Image (cartoon, rainbow, N blue to C red; front, side, top):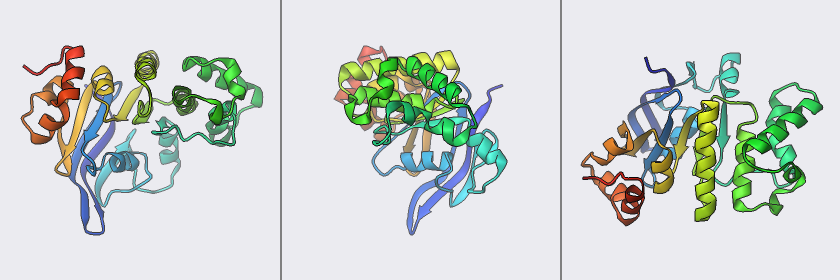
Length: 259
């Protein structure tokens, strides 16, 4: 039986008189890479913010690891939060901290660990994301875009999470760096048994990584299925988003072209 890491039921999100989500339902299965896609204003980021407890639903329920994300502060909710990591779109590194201290931050803030163990854990995470120990002393301003993403990923993995949120993980990367970062994500997901929720508009990344794709349109999830099943749905948004020129190139490269 499939285990749900995240369960969203009858979700409504309303800002003033603007309805963002209406009766939205979604499950995230353990061990999968679920991609969230949708047009501008479809509420992808808002949905993720509700998953991680930064916003609360107007109505409905969001459960992560069985805990209700309703804004309450309890030990159970805090324990659930320690079981996920977040990679923000532009890395969100602290510019005044070294690479080492950026990665060490969650270990220092959320754990009680001796500094020698923190040092070893940070070096392990650097190695996991294919960076050198010499990179630990660099400042964010010294890093390339690809290195910023890797440091941010190392920080997201610092607490050894079961669940990882990726917000536009390849945004701003050149094709070579993008391909390398996608390969790294795939390798880590397999090696660590991660469950990943990814927001992306990059079709190459989406087709390379996704186990399932959840499409947000008309204020809810219109389909959540494998990429091939999504492509078979005759919906106007899917036709325009996936079947344009760029989508056709990505699908051709991965033998996913719609018959």
